[in-house]
Amino acid sequence: MSHEYGNEFAIYIRQNWKRFLDDCFIIWNSDISVSDFHSDLNSLNPHIRFTINRNVRKMPFLDILVIITENNEIVTDIFSKDTDTHMYLNFYSNHPKHVKLNIPFNLASRIIIITSTDILRNKRLGELKAYLKKQQYPEQVINYRIQKALTKGPIVTESRRSETTEESSNNLNKIIPFVTTYNPRDYDIFSFMRQIETNLYKSEKMDKVLQKKKIINSKDSRKV
Image (cartoon, rainbow, N blue to C red; front, side, top):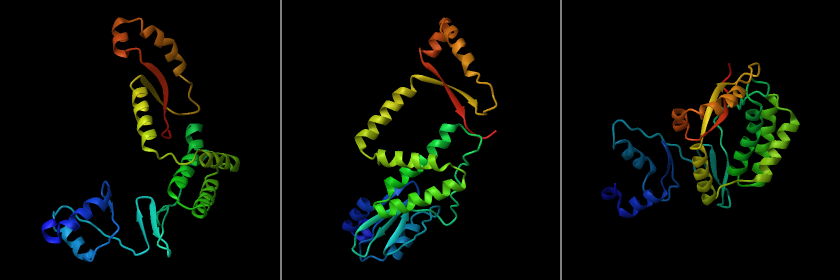
């Protein structure tokens, strides 16, 4: 569109148009009409249609609510759609214990990362406690996991993320998951795999297939 709006505007759009899959976000700082630009976007391809939401003070992007305060400061908060009922996994559901214990920690970590002020963070953590109590999470479990998330704090450094991703990828290449459906009433058949594993490596053919990889126990946590 540089021929229509000018090269300066085209550069501004390329630098400031933030996108995650089909969700887009831009702070509009131009005399060009937003409505005209929106119409022109929808004229580019008959199979692609953009919808638009705009607001002077606040705008959601994915699960983040971006707010411009009266002092022209940018504040971020958790965003939830009106249809979000916060029906998290019930504590007494038929899932592995570690899955249920990690839910309060992960939800609290998400709040800590996104909310940019102590007031918003404490408010959202208080709401989270109420949601989890409705799902029968014991209060001591909620408090312990939230405190653990607060102690750990947000992990956002690019170097640590790339190192962790590379390390995880390398570790995954060294294992073979033995997957069974989770049910607390089932007998743990992985103990038999421990006995079989040693014999598998005695076979030249299987030794070549397994390549000294470690077989680990893995559970499909879908409810049965």
